[in-house]
Image 1: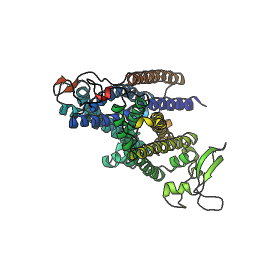
Image 2: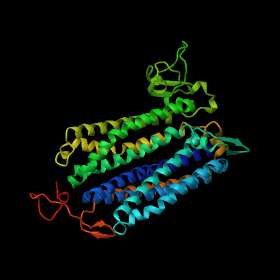
Image 3: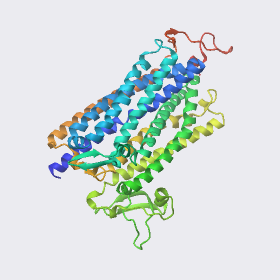
Image 4: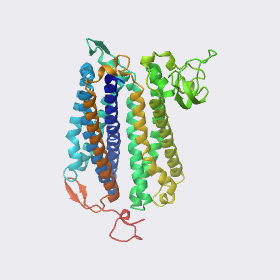
Amino acid sequence: MSDNSLSVFLSRLDFAWITSFHILYPPLTIGLAVILFFFEWRWVATNDERWYRLARFFEKLFIVNFGAGVATGITMEMAFGILYGPFSQAAGPFFGQVLGYETITAFMYEAGFIGLMIFGWGKISKKMHLFATFNVALSSSFSAMWILVANSWMQTPAGIVFKHGVFQVTDWVAALFNPDVMYGFPHMLVATFELALFFVAGVCAWFVLKRRNVTLFARPLRFALLALVVVAPLQVYLGDGLGATIAHDQPAALAAMEGHYNTYNKDGSVNTGWHILAWPNAKGDGNAFAITIPHVLSLLETHSWNGKVEGLNSIKPQDRPPVVVPFYSFRIMVAAGMAMMLVAFWGGWLALRRRLSADTIAANPWFLRAVTASAFLPYLAVWTGWWTREVARQPWIVYGMMRTSAGVSHMSVPLEIFWLVGYMAFELTVFGGTWYFLAKIIRKGPDLVSPVAQDGHQALGHIEEPAHHEPGKPEYLRPA
């Protein structure tokens, strides 16, 4: 491997490391902000203290995760200039504008309300605080939108010309609403909701398993599972739509994701088999082995029995992406998505049988263990989905227009290694600290004794107590 090839590889590896860690945090920030708004809205609407306690507890987890997302996000912005200087200069007329829009409509917008959300309890009115939480949720979603607009443009560039080494915007509407973003953004946004719902469900299931504050956590667990009955299949549907877009606009990427080399069989018929498992051969023009189901690839991508799907062998060798990473990442993502949908349906079935109430939910230990373990699945799906998306685009940094090798900074190999080691150390430190504090907050549990914030002051809440319970304590404070 030449020094130039090694430098390109290290730049890609470095940025892959940075983005793989950063993407762990924003999805939870976005989805959890929406859930916090729901909890607080229910408190304001019903004056039920339990919703307030839940909002304050999960807000602590939100703050830790939000801080990690900001720290790693700033690092990623810095890495663009350090690792991909030529690309940053070339794509500046579009990329810079989009990131500027994100700064105005997300960062600055969010900064105006997140302080009120975190520190405004008991200092501003309940409705004003609810309004602040709503705006934090909305601005977080705007951030995801602009990031996906920028990334989708790299996948399916539109509304630009590449002239004199610079991407010049000729049609802002076409550039912003490029083909990939129409499914790419909804797919990612719903992923944030799915991740946050599983996170909340996993935390609540853990408390119920431990028989800690069962009455308090049974309700949000039930709500999260019922929401997932809708969200999980919706995510599968959006993923199918995104797959059709990739098949149309990025045939090489789709072929790599499916390990699909030959458009036609030897007899001239259309090759429509879908590989469950496969491994490319040494020549890179086929699979050394494959476990294949006939016609399924055509059904998935063209929704017909013998629809044609372009294979890698019809793509110039220098334009073909790697196969192993997108192939297996895609399958792990799909498997995680199917597993989450099954857990959601399991929860929906239990809800129909009235087995998710505070009195009955603890009698389903295996389900609660499955929900707790499933909190990891959306992280795995987001991770592998992002790897699929980014690796399958190679060797292009802007698909079909600018190669990754032309977009990386011209640094020496030792300097590349220096940045790689530095970024690895930083990301691992943030990762370790984040999960340490998240685990610490969860183990400690919610604050159930501090005064409940009211309009502009602190006041003790009041919950009606059943006569058969110990007087002086709200029901959800007592052990199950």
